[in-house]
Length: 267
Image 1 (cartoon, helix red, strand yellow):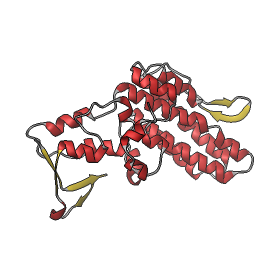
Image 2 (cartoon, rainbow, N blue to C red):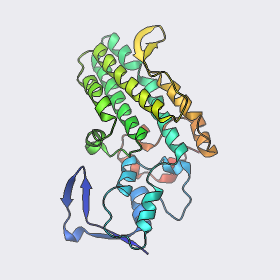
Image 3 (cartoon, rainbow, N blue to C red):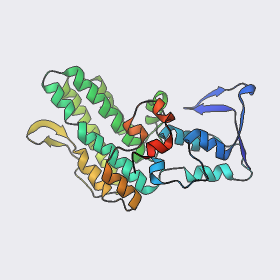
Image 4 (cartoon, helix red, strand yellow):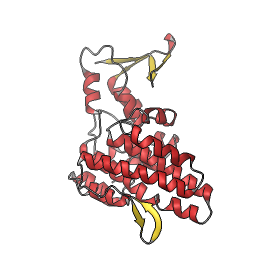
């Protein structure tokens, strides 16, 4: 049985050497149990994928492998290199659903004089857009310390980065709305390019008769859901588009909750 020796952490091109007495010898099966809370001997269902944090999956498949004679670790990494296709579509749909639910709230808060509230909602939207950027490029997003650094390495960062930064720095809700509108449109164009769902308008329009530019994220969510064919994922999508653990919770402690309890959210 293959064993892994973990002796250094390599993140964002920075190496933190660990003392010899912190070398860990562990089997591949136990490594996955510690990393994901999942036993490789059990079937991995769609709901199970949604209980794994993206940074834990990224740590599982990232970094250098210096020796793997029996190929057990390489096979593991191939298995977890990315989500199953329909789970991926569900995560994309959930990300767009979040945008659709809040994109109109940012300018509405600002228009009644609540600039702090508008800025707070705007920051949440910036993060949701960045998370969708990772998903669209099939990259696991790291935890907050490295989130921005990793985002800058995405292909989409060159186009998305400037308007998102303007949105963060905006002093008024109208400036923030204009910056976010550019980001919404760039994100929509990138999804249309992937051809994973029907092509939708990649230009913002008004929120009903209100003077607030929105991309109508819920339309992108619905278009993605319509492409899901796996019955298990269809069932999850019909219940609610909450996404995976990182899309509905910011709590680090939530990752320590028993996976069986988390899976109940999707079954």
